[in-house]
Length: 273
Length: 246
Image (cartoon, chains in turn purple, green):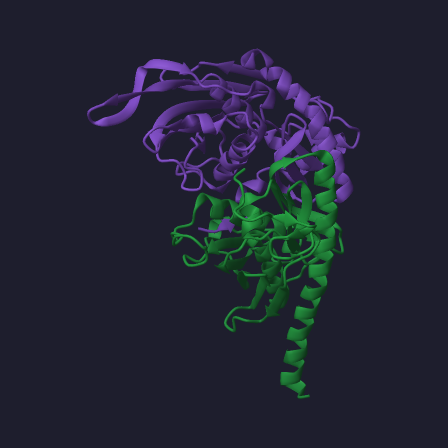
């Protein structure tokens, strides 16, 4: 398994890319937004009744569903008194004409791992409370499903994951003669620390202009891309996923992302309570 | 974060006796795999990465070839015996798949791929011994191997890691600091072009500590860059000696 330069990066015509760049030099984007403007965000929870927690995010035309299933399993050996978080992402073949059927590719794995890193250590979920007697632990399986990809999957998937966790009901631990298992008839809400919610904000760079919330088309024209995840006033995750940045650009991108964070946090407000 | 079995920072020194802004011993050699078009071995302390480059060669599978530039294929992989605890399964983990991707994206800005249409450049990186900072040691090894292969490059990409230990910014995390520190920030930097091509982070960082760490990473990369230049020079001096004698 090795990482190969993707062919898909070329699926935009040079003319269209030049148009995007030219327009951006006047600080306009092809969809009429300014560089710092985020598309409309809608977050809904409880959209999948069979899941223990779920959420749906629409960020412009990008559409991501997150489902949480709670299981019982072994804690990690280096954290025997903590619950386990497993984040997976699947970009469905529905999502774009360039998505192939098959197991998650490197982009989907990266997406899941960036969202995972944002949630894991920021204190939004207290994993210490998810230990179960008998050396077992709750396992939170968070599955991110990308149904339509119109760009900026990381920010949308992160919102979906944190909203779905907020919506999660933990099944009670039941003991019987065969051992311990989960009883789905008796559930209680998963406690989350709402103030510490991690918010991922991606910044794109096209022809020297930094912008928030890139669309699919803009992502095909990027000279650089970086995602910052904030929890309270801290940076808890960061991923440069395309191109290069100078130190000055990095600082500007950080400040831009910090301002963008407000927009996503307010979209979560109703859901988080 | 878990509590470290030994203090990570005491009287301004780290558990292995280093100052916060000090690299471990850095060793490099270029041209270590004779069959490869380019190769290098880089070690930061115990962490050892071997990189081999093959190419440019015909792009296979053919449908992945690009008409206007070359493509790169990068594999980061850890040897089953490279970690301190149990044997690591040789099957690529999700972590290794992600690192392969970020390393490719860290190297691509440095390579003049437009020079190699319809071709592929392969970079294989193997971690023989892991003690923290493996992805950044890999990055330095990979760019040395690319340079050794004579691939057109805009700059070398130097990898260094910075981290947060007892709220102090430190350079070049070892395995202990990686496991028990409060934050980890691997960086890839092109010292001449002054551009970052690899940036990842975990832990919890304030804006100030983050920017301080970036500054320290640049210093560390400039230090490692001098060693990388020397390693390349040594390689060419030894080739010259072979050809012309002493």
